Amino acid sequence: MKVVVAVKRVVDHNVKIRVKADESGVELANAKMSVNPFCEIAIEEAVRLKEKGIASEVVAVSIGSSQSGEQLRSALALGADRAILVETDDKVYPLQVAKILKGVAEAENAQIVLLGKQAIDDDNNQTGQMLSALMNASQGTFASEVVVNGDKVAVTREIDGGLQTVELSLPAVITTDLRLNEPRFPKLPNIMAAKKKPLDTKTPADFGVSVSSNIKTLKVTAPNERSAGVKVSSVDELIDKLKNEAKVI
Ligand code: AMP
Image (cartoon, rainbow, N blue to C red; front, top):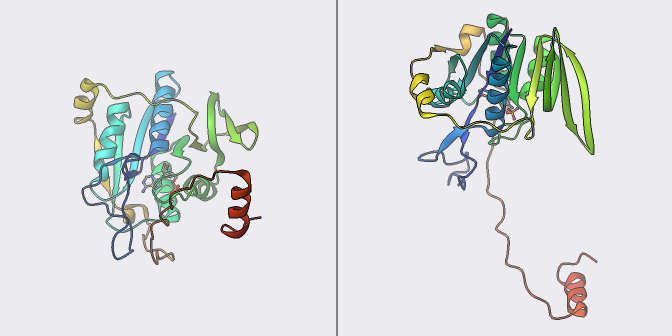
């Protein structure tokens, strides 16, 4: 069975981001960019399915500017067989991404589509859910375990206060949670070999998708600076401050 993995290029999680002066977004110039951490977990899971002999081929897909090719090369170095860059310089929102991924999954006849549960830049947590609805496929979100058994896949999901296991029929859309696996580090020979693996470039129009959206980002602002704390010398002083300064009691 073929597995498609969605890989988003995002600002590296270690970067302290800065909001642009015109409040139109986050400053990306010179910022270190990486594979979205939840997508790394998705790639790892797909590669493990291949290593177990369950997946026949792992196809990594990214939608974005030509620079997203860098993240696809990372996915290839981690073990994906092929990559598809759906190139656009426009800002894409989850519905457009889901429509494009549907086109890719159908063209590839994928039985499993793996995505991160969330992209750490826009924090939408929507794409996998929209994709499964568009594909009329079963969905297992926030996966902490994935076990394929014939034409079914058992997905253990992280839910409030516990774990829930659901059985999905294929094709299925699965989104990864943090505890699903620990992604490997790419080895140097694999990074070199990844340069020779196939990376096709397509456009949203190839899948009949217009990237125009009915959502417009009006402004992005930084959170308020936190003011420094103060040390109090007695419980009475604390209560006084809570009552008269913070006005919370
Ligand atoms: P979101 O719904 O935006 O939080 O994203 C959830 C997941 O959808 C990500 O972890 C990716 O696996 C996938 N995804 C979102 N945007 C893109 C994109 N532009 N290219 C590839 N995959 C994406």
